[in-house]
Image (tube, rainbow, N blue to C red; front, side, top):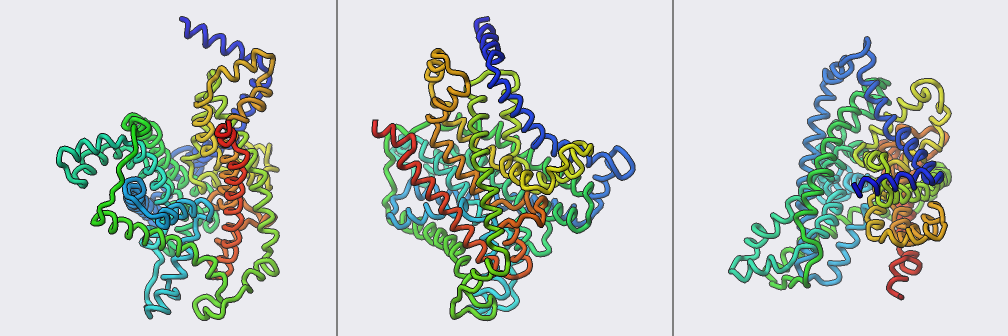
Length: 569
């Protein structure tokens, strides 16, 4: 009864705050309009058409050999990449947490964890083609192999594994650090070997986390558009098939039905990862370790593991280094020396580089603060407020994480090209820079929201209640009390949103018009044409921009962040 009275009092306070009510209404409208509505339109388009309501469109697309083949190919790649990425990530995480490494190897690990964040999603595809393709530097000019091809299944698997395993590495590293060393040391004291301890103690504690890492990578893999498009060749995946169905066959209804199939797969995996494995992981590990872990110094274990991981990290770094080097070769595949800077000049003089970087930079710069602020507002409402629509806001804002970019792009085309419900209302949004900004915001919203929720749960509600008692309204409390306390999360979300926006391709490639030139679209276009030097020149400049943004954020947080003030106090 007391709990019910408390909930009623909270609702009464909420309704008495017009700013808070307006914010909730605006948020619900935004989430419904730009996340739920496009997905609902896809469902409607999939069942209405080809003679009326029914499964006619699904029967038609499932009768296409390339579509059924694409489903099998996508699932096959997803499972293999998920398993390989989880295993490689686990090995790297185990070596960092359990083995005494020198600073050089530790530095390699840090670089590997950072590179996928600051680079476009298809950089490794470019590197793989330039090194191991038919005109590759290694295959053709060093080994004299002329009939080799990296295009197809194995090319996609290798590139995606190298791209996504750092995500598993970062996830599993945190879980390994939280395992209490006394559990493993008790087994060692009873005579168990290191392998037995790992198999009987460490691995069972990690299994939910490994499953979580696998599913996250699986979702990323099957939703990936850029890598299969560049290095897939004739190997069809769902993302590329949907893209070609709408741009090549001009079959929007068929593309919508294909998008629904891909969406169902990702939503199923997301539900398992979110509501089963995450909860199980939290219950398995007991929090912070009670004391420091005794690191492995046995050379028979230390040297092989360290050398293997160091070589793997060095290879990944080499793949990324190939991009700026490839931009300096005179003619890729025929002439490699002397190095030249002509491609960087052509980027700006002939291929509208200034416009591409200006458009991408400005659109991402506008989207980043909007995303960061929306993320913090949603986090605040979810953690600090009680109202009936709270669950809806949290679920829908996180839903965008499970929606592949290609699916979202098709949804926006079907939802806004003819206006809202084909009435013409909001039709002017389609083809403008605003719809690109909205896509950037929607795609980055879940990451910032999760970060904000974690930060806000550490703040005692009595701090904000004191401000309310002194007469401050909800806007003033949020801006002057809450936001400064979660400044680090806000800044982190700001830069993450900027980096994700400026390197995005899967959702926007279907929505961008000739009015806007975006860097990632230009890179994809030149890579498809075989103009690898130009693609590398664009990619190199983009990496410099994104890395500079991350560096500036780190410096800003170091000198002005909340954590610094706490330490000084």
